[in-house]
Amino acid sequence: MKQLTKGQKISIKLKQRLQDPIYKKKFIESLKKRESHLHTEEYKKYMSDVRKKWWKDIKENHPKKYKQIITKMGLASKGRNKGLIGPLSKAWRGGTFVIKRSGYVYIYRPEHPFSRRNSSGGGGYILEHRWVMEQKLGRYLTINEEVHHINGVKGDNRIENLELVVKKFHFGEIECPYCQKKFKVK
Image (cartoon, rainbow, N blue to C red; front, side, top):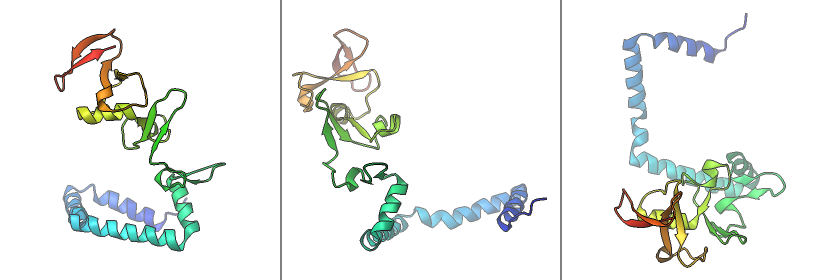
C-alpha cells in the first residue's frame, strides 16, 4: 500500500470537512475575508510597484536569469534565432510591418481577438486597415465584413480611404444594424 504524503492527508481531511455545509460556509467566508484586501486599488498599486522593482533588479543584476525567465514565459524566441521577441527585442520597429507582395500593413495587437496569436498561434498581428475601421465603428468587425481601399493603395490606411463592404454580395448598399450608416456591399 502506498504511503500518503502530509499534503495528501491534509487534502483528504479538508475534502471530508467540506462535506459539512456549516463548515463549508465558514471556510468560504474566511477565504473571502482573507482575500478581500487583494482587490483594493492600494494593494494592486503596491504589487505593481513590487513587480516593477523585481523585474528591474533581475534585468540589471542577473541578465542570465532574466533571459531564462523571459524564455520560459514565451517572450523570447526559441531555436536558431535565440533572443527576445516583441517590444523586448533589439529588432523591434514599433510593431508594424508590410508584406511586400500584397502591400498590406500589419500592426502588433496581441490582445485583439482576431490576431494571429489568438487564432493560429502566430505573432499577435492584425491588418491595420481592419483595426482602423474597428476604431471608427467602435466594435470588432465580423468575419464576413471586409475593408475596401477606395484608391486601391493597400498601404494607405487613412479612414477617408477606407469603406466597409460585406462578403457574398455583389456591389450594392446595406445599412449597418449597429450604427445605421450605409455601406457598399462587395
